[in-house]
Image 1: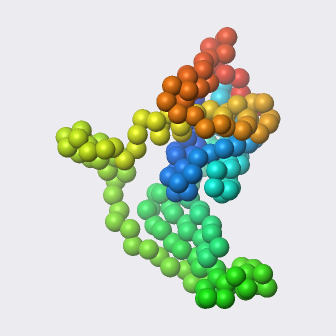
Image 2: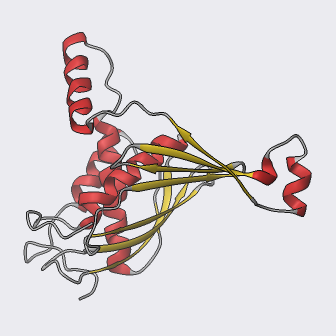
Image 3: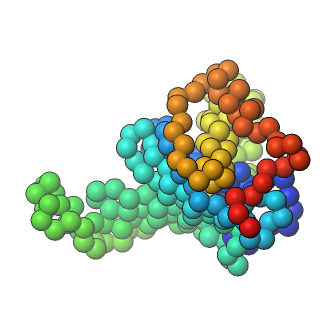
Length: 209
């Protein structure tokens, strides 16, 4: 999306990519075990404003991230690709489409995928009840507080997202893949706290200018 003048204390990874990491964990039901990032700084005075990242999850899923503050229009899309097709979600319009892999439709898929691979099938639009995201978030939070029901997203989920996002920042700075051991509780809080410590001049250097 376009460059946000209001954001001066973090880069595009912490501002935007952190939410994509959270969604990947939720959709796959698996933890992130390795990240690799290429980051650059073109407009922001201190932090990265462009990220291309590769994510590996514990179930073998591979995710990719393309996030920046350089495009002149907002693009908020999620793609989920499997053997039988691909989902495309537009966060801005809240439209959800499924694009079938025509080859995979039928009982002989195991045989046909070897012979034919992937082919274009039907496009199916799923009806989604559209809501204002921030309002839905606040309503859910208030309902949990009032009823005492478990929250759908925990504080630990938030810590994990920040932990993985900071690993992407570090990967971009150091130009290397980073393996992420399983953490929880005190170990997770300590890892996040230590990763957010500023460098001596009070801000992290950008990956490149």
